[in-house]
Image (cartoon, rainbow, N blue to C red; front, side, top):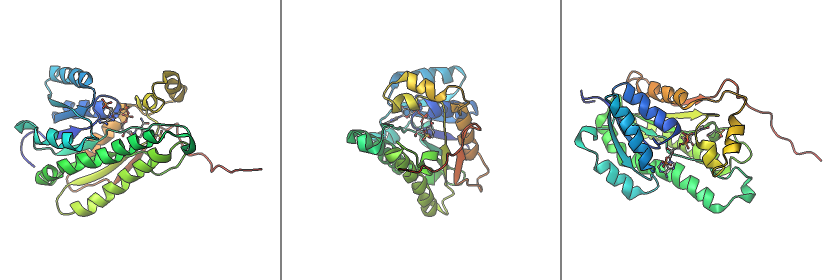
Amino acid sequence: MSTREPTTFVTGATSGFGRATARRFARAGWRVIATGRRTERLDQLASELREDGALIHTVTLDVRDADAVREAVDGLPTEFAQVTCLVNNAGLALAPEPAQAVDLKDWHTMIDTNVTGLVNVTHALLPTLIDSGRGASIVNLGSIAGTWPYPGGHVYGASKAFVEQFGYNLRCDLLGTGVRVTDVAPGLAQTEFTLVRTKGDQAASDKLYAGTEPLQPEDVAEQIFHVATLPAHVNINRMEIMATRQAWAPFAIDRD
Ligand code: NDP
Ligand code: 8X3
């Protein structure tokens, strides 16, 4: 890796885990490339971090658009071009209703974002990450939903299972390059996630997080930073993180 400050590329940095992750890396003196679709939020984040002396570059980017992803990567200013850590965080759940009631468009949106978007960004940045070599890392945001099924999880959970397996398979191909890959798989976490999932139902979102102690964006960002800054010879393959006040439920049984 170069002697310059390391650089992280964060997708979905306008909210939740991504924004907290951008702040965490910036606080540690990393160069941060913050991306997402909402330009105003990126601008706010950039001025906040620059006030603290951080080196930040923002790109308004929809990860579903492979050409735009390629242009964003090719257009990085020289001082941000040597990416050492990719945080593949952009993602969403939609349609909490049962599979049989879902609008097909919502399934497509989840696949386009969580699967296609994630591979678009990974593909565009792999050469740079390999060039960065030993100590470089890819941190993918999976979910407990990628392992543990639940009603209404359908395509969301399946997309996160893809994220997990893609990461393991990447590790096989990247063996010898020094590039690490980690699936960070959180459970219940209080972000805009549920607001998006319910298409703007603030009451439903508030209800889900009420009376308990969900993970906060900073909790997850701290673990993302942790796995990316471990000694170069250490690769955490998967890190599942739950709130202490969340656990599994019994299997459901259909009875007469
Ligand atoms: P938020 O809704 O708070 O943040 C999601 C981020 O993804 C936003 O910055 C949004 O930015 C971005 N995003 C969504 N679609 C696109 C797109 N097409 N192109 C670019 N960026 C996009 O949710 P979280 O922070 O909770 O979610 C972050 C990740 O963590 C997701 O992958 C989610 O699946 C995962 N996760 C969340 C958990 C939770 O309970 N909160 C638990 C486990 C995993 P913008 O709209 O500006 O584009
Ligand atoms: C988000 C966590 O439990 O809503 O990935 O699927 S959960």
